[in-house]
Image 1 (cartoon, rainbow, N blue to C red):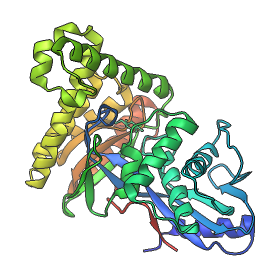
Image 2: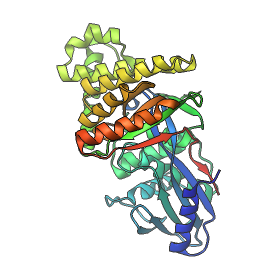
Image 3: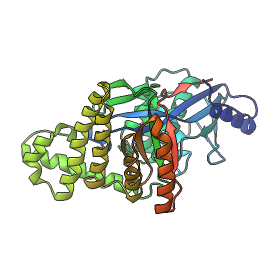
Image 4: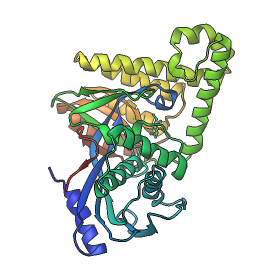
Length: 388
Ligand code: GLA
């Protein structure tokens, strides 16, 4: 099905570059249902791709020039595919970083014009950046007639983000944007990238995302701090246990119980979150497969509490959104989603309870914080695909 956003991208292309785009590609944002801050610990995540997209409409050029128009910034960036590209700290770093990764793989790319249009809220923790990377990456695949698998495209996008943009993210966001499937969430083992697409709830239960309106500020440094705490935790535990362990994925709650004493208090809390979250995520997938949505929801709540108390990446606004939601009958689970420090919560909600949840949030959240929340009732969609 063609979404209006695809038409918008084609129209933007036409008005900026004249003539029609040859190709249109859409890549979705994501919501993570459970498994937070586990991806960079070689652990488990369980995200779904959501019906908010970044669309790239593009046309190959006969020369090596590149012109990219971003509707979100109303700006054109220009460079050449054979340039030695450098990051400038603006939106164009994302597409440029992806082009750079293709260059590194030895592809001689054609020049192109492209328009980027999106309706994934930016800075809200729903992975608009990963969607840009996957849409540009797939656009290049199509324009240059090359073959790259979904998992490899995700890794390419992650490298662009780590090495070019300079954000030290894990693999989750790019992976789900590349490999999601309609009606499913994706259970990913971030160590070997094996995955299982798990059917989501039927029509009677919906995914509701609440945007706190707090944009992530300190996230990058706090995110890196959390990563460092995990790394130091695993190396201290490995030394105490006399084992060659590289990731918290390899530590169980029992092991932490026996050897946790070697860790400074703060590192112990960070490790406890990651280890428990890995166990919760695996259990949650089994519960979902067995149709136990209440059990799944309870684990989402436990995940939130652990992110709040042990990992300390929640915040007053996210906690309030979760508290309001859990007081509405028919809300089965609620938690913060994504890196934290603002952004969104994810809720699983009986369909009939969605209006009551919306009312409760609109009323209490605004009254308490003075911030206007946004609410998105979402469905799970396919990963990146060519749509024209
Ligand atoms: C961000 C990162 C992901 C992941 C989450 C936390 O979204 O990009 O790789 O680490 O935070 O789960």
